[in-house]
View (tube, rainbow, N blue to C red):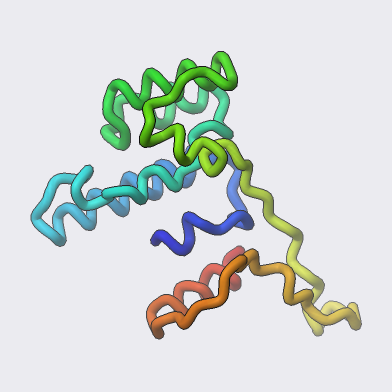
Length: 147
């Protein structure tokens, strides 16, 4: 899940979709682990780019759902209304990530569409090289297919 949330190229209409997906995933993980949702989610909740939402989207899609505590919700909402406002220290460290909008590139034309150009290797936004486990490779493949 963390790998998917780090991607800049998710095909979504709003970051609220990501927040709701993280919420659902957290519920499943909490049941599976026998823990509370905040414990199951951990730092993953801070990969949702809350500062790219409008104040209305944030209030309607995130506030009161248990993804963030009350202080975090209030601070982010105030930051949405007054950009550059104070954030708690643990959020201020990830402010850049929280405010960077996701952008997806249109998929290159497939071979059967008659376009002779090959897919660009730059389409996947992987800034660092590392060895992936088999499960991570499967998720990456699925992300590229559904992206």
